[in-house]
Length: 324
Image (tube, rainbow, N blue to C red; front, top):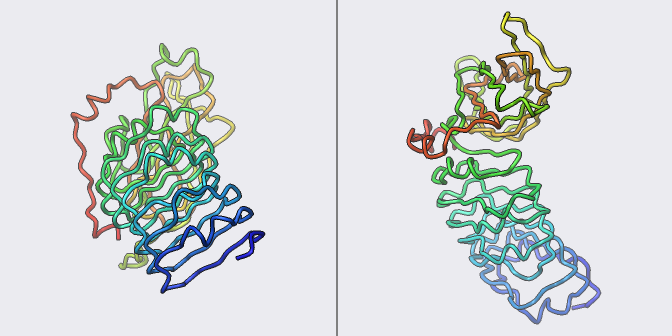
């Protein structure tokens, strides 16, 4: 095989069981390797580092159990519908990783917290990983720029702990608004008192929001539940002691790829009006065929101990059949 090869496509080689070391160890200029649908592939070589390889696609390699480790410079890693059982601790060697997809990995049980320490990581998707249980956020992940984490249809992960620890800007999780969000409401809005003793030094009102969108209904029949693309507007109205309303000049618009009856969790920031005693936060869906079912907010200055939140308990209001 030519050592100057930059891209290699082995898609749908259903009889390929093993990619040998001798096959690829000299491909020092290889930048992209596609092995989509190699349904018999069981092993990849170890002990090599293809320094030019930045994109690896193993989607549909349903017999592959070991996490690939053939390059520390991979930027985009696609492992959907594989039999991989864990994201190993050496994932923190993948310092260039920006996107990881592991959707439909039915055997995935564990994710190393080191994944969330990667400073260039932007998106991770673990949808439909039915055996995935405990997920821990790394204490060393303060500098991450991770913007999206999706756990769609992952019903057994420890949501409360992960939400409490995570620094991600945007998450998707199954179920209803959890107790972590100390202000909760049915419908699309809620009003929260402002404690100026803790906010007086802050020019902005920062909070984490959670919304759950209900199914589409056309006539008397619910549309099949599926992933959809939707827009969410966030409006912030400050209320003074006389009942007068003041709205910041800007609003937050969020476009999300989302599944119905799942939590959408995201961060918001608005200029703070210190002359007001309350704030009304409203979430709007421009698409009139959608309905916002529940919402929740946790202000950045909320000092409610996490132990108290845990003591409230949390039961997912949906079962798996409702979200498939």
